[in-house]
Image (cartoon, rainbow, N blue to C red):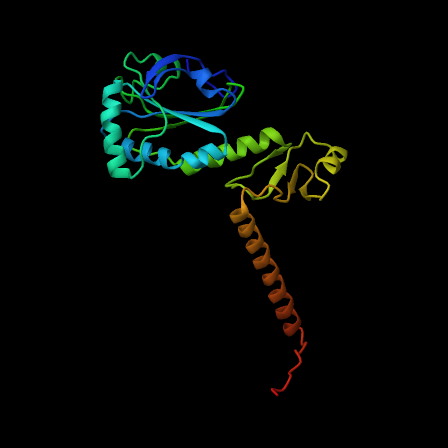
Length: 252
């Protein structure tokens, strides 16, 4: 049976490249990303594990632990890790499960028989500190995953878990958010004292008050500065079109 959002992530004990791991104990109070790859020593999988390793500082910043999986044995994982480091420039820095008996793959419905009855598809599970499934993604074997999207969704999940907001289409950390309809006017005044923009009775947008970093804050400032400049140019153009002449000052 497939896992759904809100289900408890099944616990398991498995052999990995970092020894035997109990999944729930490994996660502890952290968020988790469990992802499967079809097979060791394959090109797309090599790029994916290299990218996941390269992004470790980003996962650490979000208190996320990563763990990979395939149905290959541990010694194969260790040999393949050398190729990953050589070709991708990053050493493997998270455990990879050796799921030879497909125990974990079956628990998480990672083998789709109409695609392959031998290898896993590219499954992604984001799991919260409460051990509940927060997100599932499934990619075919021919398509590498977008880890920027995985990080974006984690940012959204962590933000919305803490505040009474939702994130709109194509949202990125630092963008405006939506106040959830369950929040009343009085509650909104208390939670969001800086105010909000009511577009429709059911659609309130709240300013971006949670920049992720100084770089993100600079991006937001530049965005606001550009908007103000465009407003100024529009106002000047409107004055000129209505016959207002700008004063001319002779050069000294």
